[in-house]
Length: 272
Image (cartoon, rainbow, N blue to C red; front, side):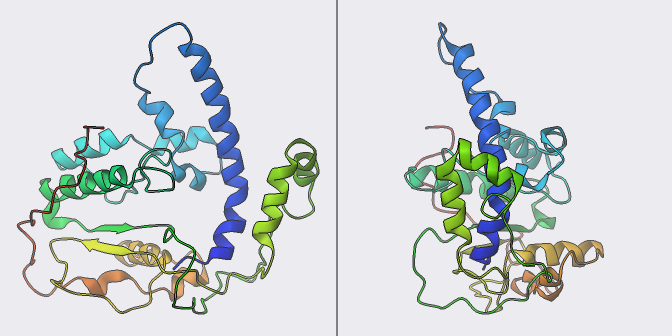
């Protein structure tokens, strides 16, 4: 669904900035912890590590003004006070289902988010899209199809390609620069999708026993937001995207107005 080349090239700069910020915070955290028992990490410190920070390029201040803790999301879901639109990220160090994490913790997180939303008072008017940024492997027997490029700008990385930043990093972090160069080797256009990733629609209006055959990508979520609030497209990619509304039946009474009971995860939330 996402174009692998595009994601790798556009994210290396924000990934590096976030990593350096994280390292500085970790050093201060460890120094402050010397000589006293370890305590629960604060919500503010946890929020610094969330992937959503990458969408706020003006700095951490703007990022912190928009982001809340997972605990706050659960409280708002229980009270029916969730905003009109929100993005829920896991802790990418602990329960994002990345190697070498315990996948049961990622399952526990996903189950808790889904169950809190389904049991909350706002459930009758809710659509939750549960998806992934990658498929967790190295192979897909279905070749990625062509994609509509977002614009006419070729892919470029300030770390891998010639720039003042690259010159500095090549001295300080040569391994990081080599890795960035490997990531951008190959096509420099964003005109091909990557491997497929799972996506699940959770809503009282979801069609029962239904598999949507439309070709969707992550900008399909943007397309849905644009259709819902009459917003213009950001790029040619999301303008051409298909929203996942086909997975819903809005012409009939909601099938899952009474939410189903789902199998319990192997690890209950809050027990690990």
